[in-house]
Length: 402
Ligand code: GLA
Image (cartoon, rainbow, N blue to C red):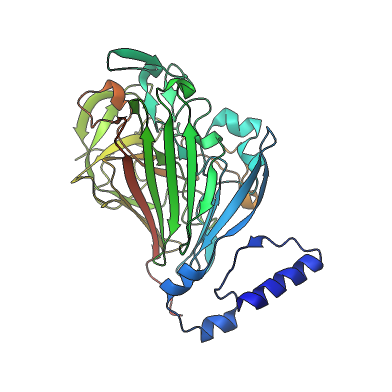
């Protein structure tokens, strides 16, 4: 469809009183006919297509927030709101080319702000900062000074505190020529107890190869701990299975960080070999979960990390044929099997999110690193730039003949 035709169609829709989302100069196909006649490559078409923006409602304090849609030519569609940088929906085709939403979340901002949601704190799809995972007793000492952080997980600090990066409004901008959204948030000196003004940019890019790429970047004016991640819950069956326990998971990690009862690392890195923690060979999430007290909620120390992008995990869901590969520059990945979901939250498509309905693979540095001198450092210093990247790539196995 030509630009002028599309504009005309939108005007017509608006004239008819239909809610049409704002589209910026979309040059790409939007009809089946055009798909058959288009002569540009996927890459070119994808680059020419601007992203869609629509209202996602108002936050409790009255701030208007937006929902952005990234799309590629292979039928993948990602929706992201600048409230918390949350990935609200991620549609990928299954082995029969049937689209399905593979992440947990809500259709509007109220869902992410309800009392029930805030009480149970699942962090669906959100950007997590300044520090993903726990900091023991909400305290650390840096350059001789002790800092006290907000405690929001018993005695500990979790996922950036009471109002972490998952609950703030990010400034959003389109990245020209790409299916990408750049989010920026400036965290003030002292926010949630952290030192320094921290400027964070997170860019979500949907590539023509069905990758959702997340690039994190940050600078600070005082030394501060930082450990950014995304907290998406996946269920690759997209409603075709009762829970996520049938997903076949592989994690490229020979060791994990042992934790105490409050999920704070003891400092020990323990080999997974011969234990229920071993996912070095493809294994169903549910195969041994009954033997893991509370379910999986552990940081795996990835093997062969050197700061470049390396494959960290692979997930295969047999009913849909969907495959998700996770690559990251990070040294760790938190595998969380949705243990605290209890059915009390109902999300998109009227789905009750019961225990183990979704799982997370949060790429990260290790938990409580500011208090663990033997773990890779998470301290960002003024003049340095924090840079990490993670890719979630989607494909299918056992594809039906088209
Ligand atoms: C992380 C934590 C879990 C839990 C979830 C959110 O994965 O490690 O213990 O807090 O986030 O519910």
